[in-house]
Length: 315
Ligand SMILES: Nc1ncnc2c1ncn2[C@@H]1O[C@H](COP(=O)(O)OP(=O)(O)OP(=O)(O)O)[C@@H](O)[C@H]1O
Ligand SMILES: N[C@@H](CCO)C(=O)O
Image 1 (cartoon, helix red, strand yellow):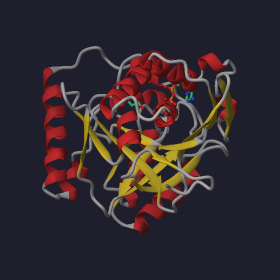
Image 2 (image 1 turned 90 degrees about the horizontal axis):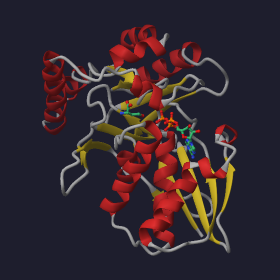
Image 3 (image 1 turned 30 degrees about the horizontal axis):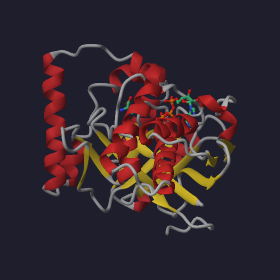
């Protein structure tokens, strides 16, 4: 039996649309992500469990887990009959990389189960391809951090797809999912096809500055540069409470705040736990729209995907 956990992630950390993504884990150690368990079987079987399993497509052939299994078998040119349990803990269309969690956990579990026929680059390419089929275009900023951990800079170079960049150890990442869903494909569709030269230059300057500040250990500069000129100005119309919440969170003391992925989740960064707790409390009272919504104070999850034992301890 192989049991794999893939963590939730924030795609775009304010700055770095489709280029920066961060894996996260609640500071209390709760697992925030999907779990996939694979056992040998005589034919393919998929059982969905977990709090958000009722939101998955009813038809197995529409579950990403099935698509991952099929593609994996096609690539290794072998039919591998398995029984899969998907523990769907991440809400779909949340902005926290829910599909990426399922994709990463399934492909890593299949690869382990088959004694690693694919190397990490081949796996990551496949993860990006499957994410692209769901959201309309390939973007690695959820699958790469969920797979590799930490804050990932997507390079898509001929040799290297993504690399980890340094993070600030005293940063608390508060995430809030209001309990409603936004389709990633739709939130990508509303973005302009073309941007003005000045916006491209500004975006490049902020992204380059953020990477520089991360390497030269300047947290306040890094936080000031976490600004999104590509997606946020267009997505706020589908996230009516976001700007008001951002203003309030900044007043409480967040050093940065933005839309997580394509929303509706948001993230805020605080450099001390007391401010993080105050932000978390405010979000719980004011940003959640129903009792399925949640708020977590997180660290970056530096490990990424991992194998778990029977009792969910990391192996
Ligand atoms: N195992 C799965 N996990 C998540 N989505 C799935 C899964 N299987 C099928 N789907 C479908 O894939 C689509 C994913 O939509 P979308 O890209 O908006 O969600 P997401 O990746 O969960 O979003 P986000 O990155 O914002 O968390 C939905 O139509 C959903 O029903
Ligand atoms: N970079 C992607 C992340 C989606 O979760 C977007 O913002 O559309």
